[in-house]
Length: 188
Image 1: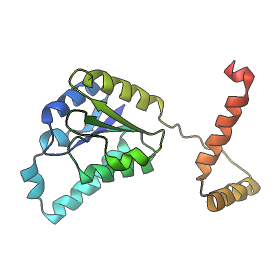
Image 2 (image 1 turned 135 degrees about the horizontal axis):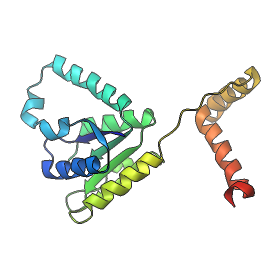
Image 3 (image 1 turned 60 degrees about the vertical axis):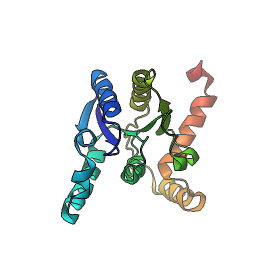
């Protein structure tokens, strides 16, 4: 399993190292370790071309990864963009913050997604919080499933997407979830 780790360049590198080391011990491979290595002076001295190259690399890392883990105790506008991009790509996202130094990013409090976990931690709970969050993220990964449908089915799904503002895949998953819930033979 591949993990993309994000943290503010001026954040607590000791916490970052503990998070990354815990993930590695659990069998996760890091797509990049730039949050551990970069510092504020390097970022501020980048040229426009270097910033554009970084943005392209970030998108490639997000496409390559199985899950994203963000340490958000320090505000980080770039991390917000990466969180949104990862969620749009259907990636599980874990946002962690140190309870004694901050709070959950305000805007994330209003987002309801089974792909998003927002978790507080302290020195005592950090290892277990990372483990539980990564376990949940690995369980919540989507599996791609392709199948053929009739033009009539496609027209209906397109109508649902347009008129009810529900993505076709979400509509189909909800139908399956409802059927699973009501199937006593399956749930018994």
